[in-house]
Length: 265
Image (cartoon, rainbow, N blue to C red; front, side, top):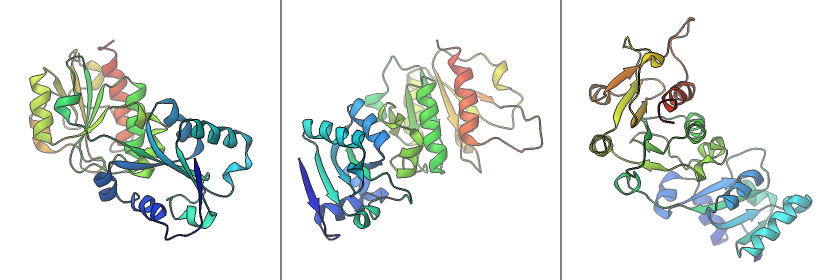
């Protein structure tokens, strides 16, 4: 199914543009994905793709035409619009000419953290979209079961976050929860809380990790909040051999996730 739209005041155009704002994404439980590659991943991962917009240039490539045939077979609506209108639906300068709107389900931690889960990542006020997306992608690669995004984190459905995940947003179980709820449920399920923290004598590679571990990564500038620190079972740090004060949050998370994973395989 397809339709041509030539007016910027079209209801579908206005609705899609509204999803560039976090409050509207949360209200509608929908977010925007952009680019041919991530759209193909969405189809492969059986994401709930609601509809697609393409610009005037998208159909010039044969592989793009073939992808539109796949969408047609799946009865996914495709709206074709002008390049100018399409630019208003994205937050990138060099568009690939295709975006999709994906439905997501609002999930609770209590319902989605299973008894089989052994590796959890807790994110405390991660605010940079690039960091958030990279952390989600790395967690996917490192075999993390669930990511808990606490209050103060950047919206995981921010378009910049989505691009940085490189498709891992469709594979990872990412849940928003309050700190109180997260700690209560994780303790109930016998998780050790391991926090990345500079003011400790424990180096990350000298610790033996529990078979059920929840790793906490803190805010880029301020680290982990003091209440989380006080309720952690273990504090660990990564050695700094040069003059840098600290590591980037995404880099730190990668080093720690892969070290912890050794104990969980």
